[in-house]
Image (cartoon, rainbow, N blue to C red):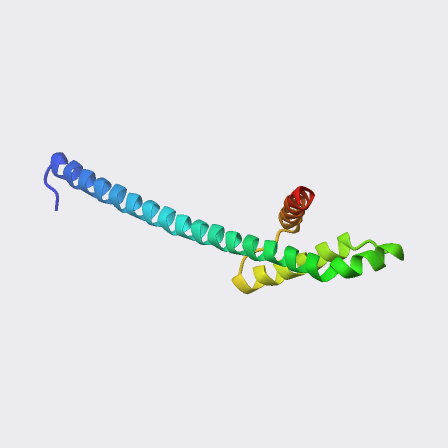
Length: 123
């Protein structure tokens, strides 16, 4: 089939180049798919962040009147409100097919509350 060593080396070099090109194409395609997936996940997380902030405001409004009464009886509403928002976020994550990270979302809620407290103190 191959008469000389040069022919064998020539075919081997061509095959090696083709394999390298194929591997490069596969790697690029995988990276592209992964980047699209990461971008979609980031977009979804941002959407949930926005919804969570709105939920924190809504819960604050709902509890604004009851908080005074509950605090007078010794019931602290902070954890109740936070758990309500966490449950909302948990359902949003489930609906959108992303993993719920309670530590991350707890920190986000704390951040939202800090922002709200700063804006309240300015009013």
